[in-house]
Image (cartoon, rainbow, N blue to C red):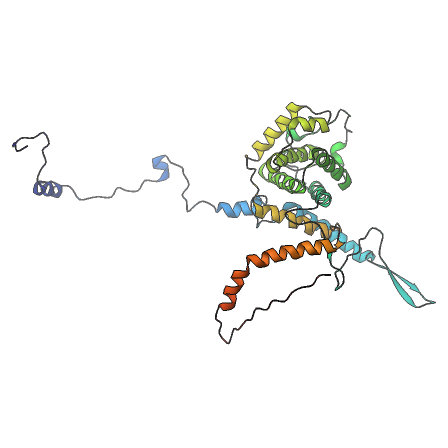
Length: 358
């Protein structure tokens, strides 16, 4: 302290300014191209909008992309409607000349639609949060049927892990022309129903199974055909049960349902299924709801409507109790809405009247 010499020598600001003034003026270096730098990274402005690409090709990931099974089912629905119109199958008109009355006779197998009236209200017991198990499995089986029937004709790649000839599910021999005949909807339904009833899976798991199935077809760029549909559906059910249900079914349990399959085969099927999905097992609620309502739309177009039952007194009381809970919950919001001032040009009055359900 106080000595003229010190270990830390600092130049004066004046000397620093003089030194800075002797620096050369800044000259920007010429820009180097990607080839000169050896970097082939794509510029962000040149990249495609990945969301738009995924939106178009990955309906199992984005809620606004249309499902594959619904688009494939619409071609058959148009053909059915055209044939019904040409052949007059909707109704057969029988004229009785002696009486002069025209009877409208519905063809066999056609379900008459029920409509609500003032005295009777028809409702189905299927909701997006609690779907009907039986009819959800029927709709999923119908969606798989349309996938197989209207598959691409160019012949996409077939993976060995899903080939039933290489990895049979039973010891019985498959016919030589097994891959040439498409399975019927009833056969697909029986296979899926057997797995769901034996493993005690829920209806929500069936919808997630369809999501994983379409995600596999999109990611792996494969087709579902008569020779691989059983193992693809089995892998989708196996994965959906583990992701959705809290108490998942183990792989060894499926070996008790399908007696001739081994645990090692089930483990390998699950591993390769996950790898083909790129370990993307997330199913957003919006995607789940889209698949549920698209299944209902497909069912209605194919006369596979959910069963309608008249509203009973017990259900009416439950709906009334739920409405009272919602009424108490949003009571404060309605008060705020009533106190809001409105101009004479856009005057709206909120009126509340009790509804009587008998």
